[in-house]
Length: 271
Image (cartoon, rainbow, N blue to C red; front, top):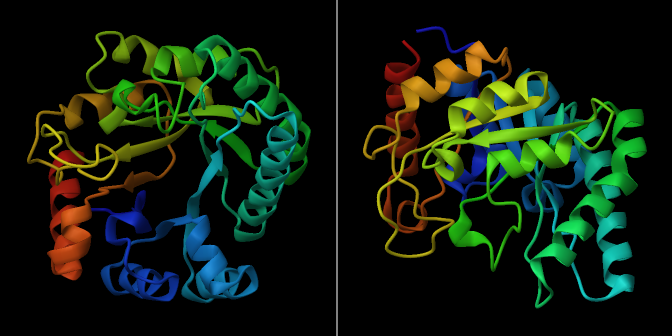
């Protein structure tokens, strides 16, 4: 199986350092990696850039920006400034996209929080375009609306992205978050050229942290083959990230075996 578009989202094996994750990609012939900002901070940006460059890897995305809403205007400005730093990190790593987890309402009405998300993205469009980095709005499952994101459907993400003329604003299709939606095929097609990320895992009913209780590819109910076909039909030709956030695996699994299993299952879906 050709792994030319495979990307290892390093939170699939969260305990690993960036250096360890890069080595895992090289060992398995995985050509791309998705890097989280805490791992960049841990390594230092210059070291992170060197690790990726020396290994000959692409960076499919940097995660995460966003978390725009706040009742405090001063805090909202601080968060926008932090997102500017995230854009700079993504650009330094050659990542085409900064994934935006847009943030919860923090006690405000949802309408106000959603307006603050739009304002935050608007404040960053010029910086992103100038850096060659796309702001990739990732809708999260509605169960996460109170803690992580007021953008809870691909339809909403598309509508938000469409407000901006700039191609620097796009959307991410993470199957874990959107598979349940009866409109998802239509919304993937609607995204078209705005689609700048496709993440795969699987869904079984979460028993712990909803964010980090994702199932191994093939162990759940998501029709991954169809969703992948819809993304291809929409024109998506970017990297496909294995992103299986699972706290039990992080604590107890042989993570090398966990990743090997994920790659094998990915190959079965992609054929």
